Length: 411
Image (cartoon, rainbow, N blue to C red; front, top):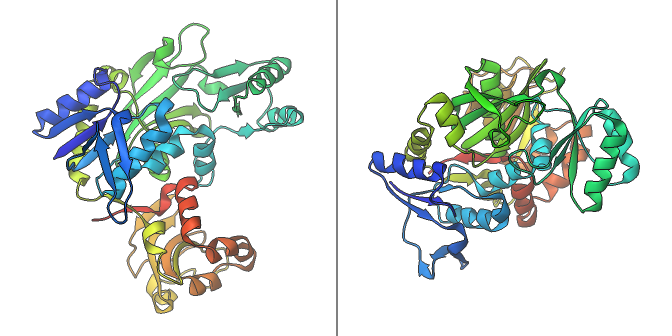
């Protein structure tokens, strides 16, 4: 395998470990400065130039893109994807995870625990928002903050409003988030690779510091995660479109609460704490999937006139409850079920003898007119514009704004 690692800092621990792990496995690897690329766009021939020379062929690319160059960095990753070079993290996935508000908006639709969060711009909305998330103390977060920078705790209402107004006056976007008291000063970082958690550690703040980031002096300890924490971490990464991610969770009284999903997690802290070869696991994952570049179903499948991808829900009282997929008659209506979501579990390519139950969700590709008839009247009015306007423009918008559930792997 010939692998390119996108990084502006080849001497950092994470980049050095990834290069070492790749070479140990006899792969060819090169660290490329993300800002040294030029993107060429021509009909059916997407291309990349690196330091004024046409880039040679690579089998896979591993993005390690800093927050300060997110826009250009994801444009480079997107170009690699257009060239059908495998990337464990898609450009859309990186964008989804990099924006705290966007990531929480996406996760909030998928029955994944997140702390109550509000986002406001009007000064008059601040106090009601604080009340809605449970009142003080509240956590105030800058949308662009990393490594604990821009994360503040306000234990008094006057302090909270003053902080928010000051930050907004400096044209900063801030989130107001419930303070999960039972997890004060500690959180869990899980490294997700593919469909499993390969390493996890608990980070504990020191002294009066409530932020547990290692960069803020927090200590770490290896932890064996419960199944519900593992499942939530993997689902969060997949929903955002990431094959490699660091998922930060609070240990709430009602179970895991997703705090943040990082598309370029640092390796030094987790490898030192757990003594596990996380870098090697990342390289092995890429090598195993290099022949299966990501395909955006909404982009590829909705170009056929009258066909598209949508999700069909099975509500209480539906005539489909208790029937198998074969008995449902969907195939006769020219509708193919790609995945079935049942009780927080995803069944890809479900068998025809799979029995449908209330609240199942079916991700389908098929004739739009047939699928429209299966959507309840109330939901149909809400979804009609989305189905009616599945044009190239709306597909592009959906790719950049929506969750990555419409993404699959295939050669």
